[in-house]
Image (cartoon, rainbow, N blue to C red; front, side, top):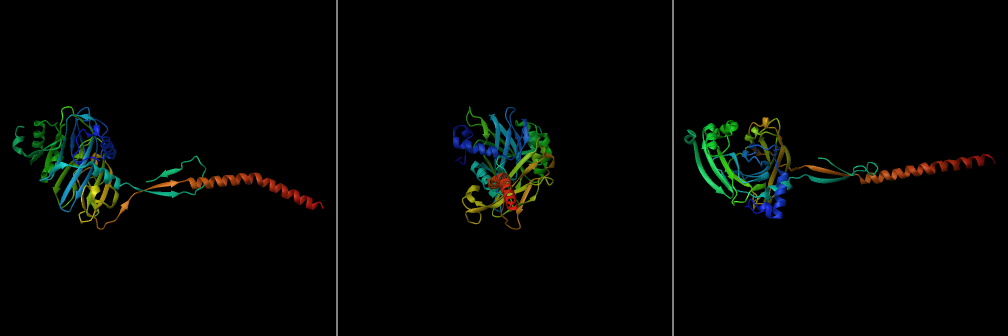
Length: 364
């Protein structure tokens, strides 16, 4: 199992951890196929090197009724010795390390259940037997509220009223120019949110990042669970999104980030609280309610962040992957084929005997 605070180099040294991280890579919710100096991801603007780029991200959102925690894992396709990204967050956001196991367990919980159905339709063998369905002045306009290190993450929390000045501050402090994000940045600043400038720096001189990066966790107070995705409107490619929402009850999407491309409900039901990284459920039991949503968004369709609200009722839902076993039909088809063959051979004989018997009887 992967520890709660994995080391960046663990992918190379621990076979079990490698399998876990490779699974997270396969579960990633947002894919980028062309290397770029900076791309948009679900929670922010990733800045990577020319030789490597982020290939995916998957997230879990946990809400206890007053405080929300977002755990996200990002994956890279090649080694890099310096990675950075920028993301919005409400004031007072706590930053820490998350658990990769949580992402994996919630994904497994939300998988479709498999139903086996026997198909008695006559058919011959050889056909498919199984089928599946389913700087300058910017220093005065931007305030550095805090600078902290959490594991391999160096995080600077920035606040201000002017997104242009904040962008200038980022450039002056070694971040690439993201003038394309001034509009979305300004929207978050107008809401009283902060901008987090994050660097992921190796802790050893010969260490680099590849595969799944260490999980990062953001936690903040809110009465309305929200998932920030507006910066993905600047992405170069479509965004694959998978959100695991953990709460005491079923959570509906109350505000779609892309109304023209709404996310699909993939799963809704009770799961073990330990799968969500919790000791107990929010009601004191050992279970929580998991609502999983997924889909693909085109950047131009993204106009807002996702917001969630308690559903009118808890309605369990799980997709069904129907596996149709056609072997009974094949057996029936073979039996029919044999019967027809026998009829073709025996039939003429029976008819000939009957005719011969009738003739002998007529000649008496």
